[in-house]
Length: 176
Image 1 (tube, rainbow, N blue to C red):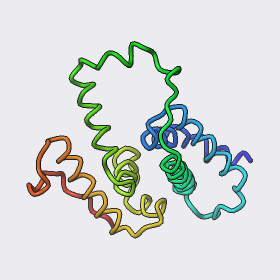
Image 2: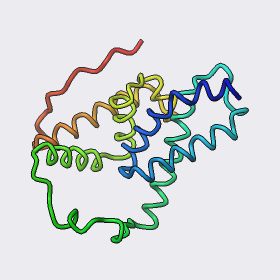
Image 3: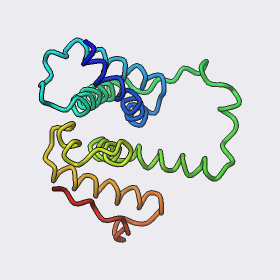
Image 4: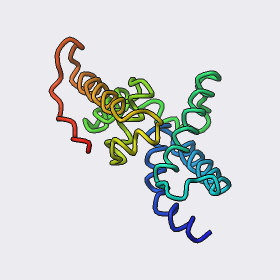
């Protein structure tokens, strides 16, 4: 039990960050992390003893998030109007950084889920391509191509350029 707590506890902030980036709702993200941790604790005996706990937890979180997103897509969006302050409905942000942040989130939301997950895991969480491939259960080459396409789409969305114009982007990291 102590071994499990020692491995899981330091990963909670990273799990919360990834969940928040996926769901865009702090409450839903916290619920997702709670569900992930509950599943990890109840199924700890199923974990491979020599496997990486971080990869295992991120895989659980990712799979739960995909399930929730599919359920929401079937059910449609729900936003209780009572929970939103009236001032937030009437006033748009005036700060340029707020607008850039909104544009970034819009561009991120426009990415296909496969590309968004890879982009978030590699860039925000700092996972290697191999760890990302293990979490998403895809080949490393697929991670690299999805990341490249996601970066190109994000650059094009943020710059407002056409898809036919090649985007200037950072080079990919070398995987060994």
